[in-house]
Structures are given as C-alpha cells and as structure tokens.
Length: 274
Image (cartoon, rainbow, N blue to C red):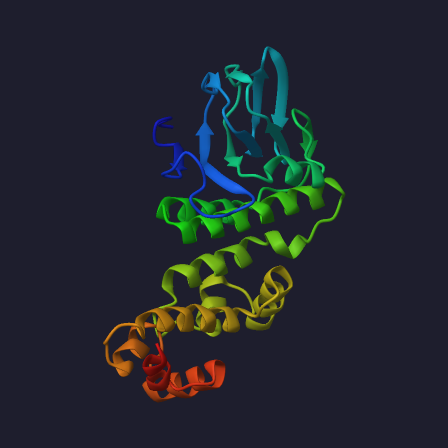
C-alpha cells in the first residue's frame, strides 16, 4: 500500500465560513493505512471528528490515550495537541473538521461529548464522499450543502449511539445506486431497470430499499437531478431540445410536458420569466 495515495483531504478556501452557516465544514477527508503508520502530530485548531471504517487507531490528545475501533467515533475540541501511535494492523477512517457559530452547541445537542470514544454504527462513507465534493467546490453554495451533510452525519452517529439503526440505509447496493445516478444521470439510457440490472437486484427491491433509505424513489431522484440541471441550463440561450438531451431526456416533447407539470410553466415560458 502506498501511504501517500491512501490519504486524501479537502479544505475550505477561507479561514472562516464565507456562507452564513451555523455549522461549518472546514475540511474533510479519509486515511487508509497499514502496519507501522501513525497519525500526524499537531495542534488542533477546530473540532476534529473521526469515524473509524475498519481497523484500530490509537490517538494521544495532550498525552491521554484514546483507542478507536471499527464503528466508533470521537470528537476532539480545539486546543489539543494530538499525535498517534504506530498501528499494528491495516485500517481506514473518515474525518472532518467543524467550525461555525453553533458547532459546540450542535455537538452537545447530539450527545457527542468531547474526547469520549463512542460506539455507533457503520460509517456512511457515501455522505463523506458528498461532503468532499461540496467542500472541493470552494463556493458558498457548496458550504451550505457541506454543512447540511455534516449535520446528517452527526445525526446518524447519534442515532447509532442510541441503538437506532436503519439497516437499509447502509445496504451497499443502495449506496451504489445513488452514486451511479449522481455520476450518470445525463445518460438518457439510465433508468430504474438498468440500475437494477447493473446492481444485480430486483427492480422492486431496489426501489423499496432506496425509498426506505432516502425517503424518495430512485426514479423520482433521477428525475429531480435532470430537472435541476435543466433549470440551470435554461438560464442560457441553448435551444430547449438540446437542453432536454443534455439533461438525460431522450424525448424533448416528454421533457417539456414533465417540466410544465413539475414547474407550472413550460420551459420557454420559464426562460422568459427569468
């Protein structure tokens, strides 16, 4: 394993949140390691949140030892000097740092006490992936989404601590379904049947589990992704028929009917209203 390639992090471009967010994501990333690796040494300047994916990690915060294992989390407050012991086995963890005017109160409300190593549930890695993408944008809109996703991670951690687990939430194929749609929604061939085939599951099972996990059917989520892109593109002068194809609609006439039903205006009238 190449340790350099197994570590990744993203940072907000400004020292303080540029968006008016109560909970700010300052940075986010992941670390994958093998035997002999140790956590970097340094002074903590923000709230550090760790979620162990696999293996074991032993940290020292102001010379007090804390050992994290798979499915455990820890919050370390600013001001601590942190260092790590060499690990004896391969492992992985996800992390982010938090700031913002309500960060301390938010952590307390969720019962995420400073320093305590807390047993929760399986790490929702797909949410960390989406936080990485939002922080990497380095835009106020990305900061809002990163803060909301960070809040969701904290809520899942708190629920897991209380023994509340939604098994469907962490089904591997449900998470993969979401990732495929986020990456390929502009492909007109992508639909629930193709998704089920690629994932090797029954269509109705996929739809049921996805809906239980995210509160929305996969077909509806796919439609919203395409319509969201169309709303952005309609601010330009691109012909509506070309926008339909670019957003993943193979039939421009169907796109116009769907857009009118969802938005209350035809694509042309929506553009004229801008």
